[in-house]
Image: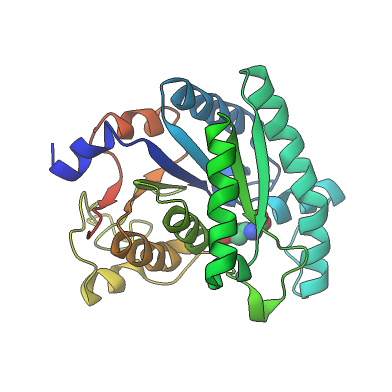
Length: 267
Ligand code: GLU
């Protein structure tokens, strides 16, 4: 087991990010309740085991689309803002219900780019988060899509989760995705593409492997994950990309097992 993976066994403050493509059924765009319940139970149990969990969740827009029976993501900003406002509540209702079933309290935080940009706002956020964590509560974070416009958007939750991990001094950021990790080719078209276990340095060759594409429901794809990895690792946070479709992956990866791709912290 590599030193970086060994450290995961004792890491205390952990940010877990889950993307829309993990939360929703690809065929229908509707929420995957079975998977969401398993995930929330896993987070509650990690918390019971003594880890501090910060949960960054996408899916507001998808939940809004589902609620209104809209099949394709609209193109205009106001429509997406409206769907986020509708869907964020739907999502929190479901999380609240599942967390409550496992005796866990959660707290919602909606961020904009401004929260991460000036010292005062950063300090404010850090204090609020530390207080919630000290209360034994799990913060659930999304970007405040209902009020952010392009100029002040972070835009994707991979980068948002890296910003959050940096602001709360997390040791680890785990990005749960619909792919097993970073491959040295595109596994969808190239059968010989191999999963990379550890990326010690984010070189231009690594960036090339990331390509550009996302999915119909998700926003980022591998490109924003590599951006997030750069930000996280250069600020002392170890990042992982792990497949969120397999129940138990989160617990196993935190036991040091060789799952997904790890980007060890630089400092
Ligand atoms: N904040 C957006 C949402 O909740 C998702 C952004 C992303 O998928 O990265 O729908």
